[in-house]
Length: 304
Figure (cartoon, one colour):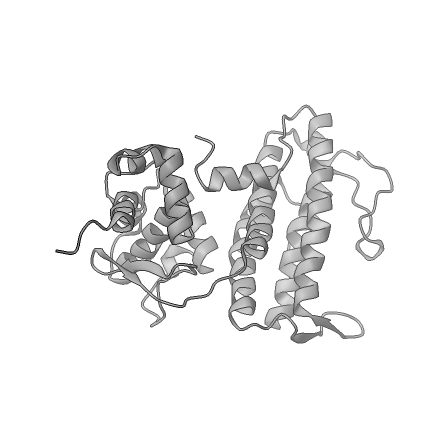
């Protein structure tokens, strides 16, 4: 007789088909949401909502690779819209679900505990797996999510308010030129990732609309965000933070340490995002503080 495996019971509660919220999971494990989250996070190193979201995405990727319908996979993974699923999938895998053919790679996403979906319906625990440090992971993902939220808020502005000069002569960096409007600041936030991705990938200088509408910028952000997150995870996986690239897009070409590129993007993005909040409020838009503490609470399902 093996006795009671409480951790396994908690994991089963996370992955039960009928448990789509933290409350459902906790009820299934006969625990309060607080106790359920505390114990599972302590023992598995991952909060229940985040674990379910990741494992369900792994299952969705496997189903699509087996020829399954993307819409069906999205519903099974707990997403209420195909758009939301496609965005989450692209952020996780670096490409949209429509490109999730059988390329021979693993559907597993980074996990500190090594717990993954194993077809057709079970879990696999891969011992000794490493993933990005929580600080790096949170800084990068919060930046992407927060930028998207701000662009989405800006969609409610009239075009005149979107492009209005709010800081005459304002510059974030001398080499970037003036950024005097909400449109300019948010466009530079997205463009920074596009141009650095081109440098890291050895691609041509990005040919993009430098005066987009909020909707057009949101499409650019979603495309760049998936590639940016995938690139950083690849750098971390290879422990290539101290590697250098020679950026042929510069005139003359310059060399950059990969870690400094990521730090550069995050530093200037943080300033631009907070400045955007100030200007959005001046335009009558109710914007929150952009606090990563509250963002993480939402990620972990602790705000419910």
